Image (tube, rainbow, N blue to C red; front, top):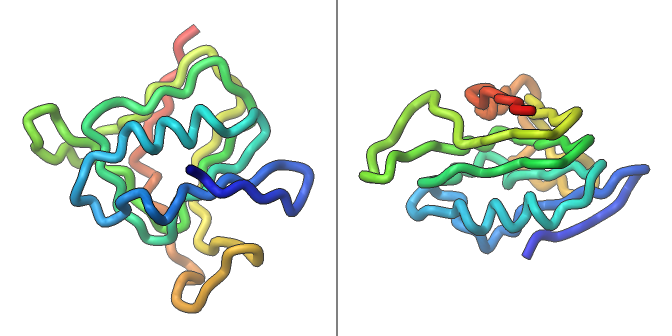
Length: 134
């Protein structure tokens, strides 16, 4: 279950630490639940420097004004055979507007912890290719 906090005009949804962020197991369903549960206008925060393994697509459909804050995290796409597909996006965006993937390097004041603020770090969400289908 994601943690929801609101420190400004939008909600901040943190993907739970209980979701494997080591890359060892498929977390597609858990991440999809966090995405689906976030209201429009939310910021969805991944665990700093986490590695999320997704064997299936993450669907963002009929949504608006969502921001995915990477904090140095990586969402790795895997084929159904278990092979890692570098650079392969697992996001499927359709009928949505203003969906953003940030290169945020700091989890922000509400969740900053020692060792998790690395100035200059670039989120590995850069591999995400937004495909919008209307």
